[in-house]
Amino acid sequence: MDVFSDLIRGVRSHGSLFGSSILSPPWALHFVDGAPLTLCTVLTGAGWIVPEHSPPEPLRARETIVVRGPATFTFVDEVGTRADPIACGEHCATPEQGGTRHRRGWADHGEDAGDGHDHGATTLIVGAYPVRGEISRRLLDALPVVLRVDAGGTADAVLDHLAAEVGVDTPGQQVVLDRLLDWMLVCTLREWFDRPGGEPPAWWAAQRDPVVGDALRLLHAEPAAPWTVASLAERTGVSRSTLAKRFTDLVGEPPLTYLTRWRMTLAADLLVERESATVADIARTVGYADPFGFSAAFKRVRGANPSEFRRTATTASPAAGRHVALPTRTAEQG
Image 1 (cartoon, rainbow, N blue to C red):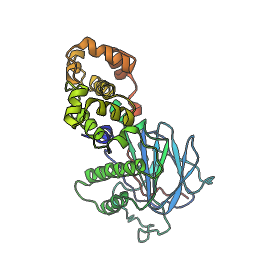
Image 2: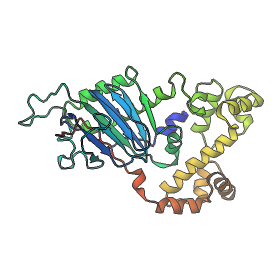
Image 3: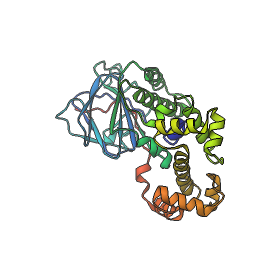
Image 4: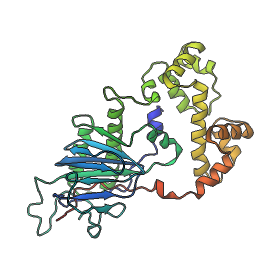
């Protein structure tokens, strides 16, 4: 398991809604849920993404923008549009909420829809993603509030698949659309991390190193193993001193310090997900035979002991993790 795969595994699209009305200017769709991650891309036409606390960003055909919550944002036909904002969120895919007419299919077969195609319309796809647990929050920490990926990259093929899939209404379509959105997000983040002149997180660049990349994969594949610098160096085929220096230089911390933080991240999610598990159970799962040693390490890294963390996490509001996926081709405005 590589680092990126581990971090993104809790970011999943599920139950996405697709629409088919025509988005003609002026328009202003205010996405009010403040999802942890929201992906916006247009197949045709153009508009502007206006984040709550950031400058407006143009969004042209086949470009993609990802907005990191909890701040909200608006999609408008132009900056300063005269359109009144329509609040879009969990229920925005219903006409009475100003949203889409249909959940599946691009073509609008209503009496006033003509041939169902408006070549001047803007075709918007939006996917809002929850972030489940502490593991995926490490991915969010590596992202800016707004990131952009231009057209012409690997995500273009996914857009073609999305356009084809939403043009039909077939069994299993929802699952296909969900997976396509997941694919789209992965492609977008890969391209953004690899952009020329970019500053990706240390773990992203370190994955490409032949020594440190192998060490990271081992730590993520076997986090509960009784790792020492010596055993990790042996598995990667270098000396202890070479591994320790190279790992620290590229990742920014020594191998066992990284391992401890990763184990505590895993433990934080397990404490919430496995309500019946004891602290000793969680300790053993992440590689600690002694629950007291585990509790001390957890408090040092997370700032609270395991029981306190579990109590706080399970009583917190679930709203921040609520999933709203709203890919939509248009919302008709006058």
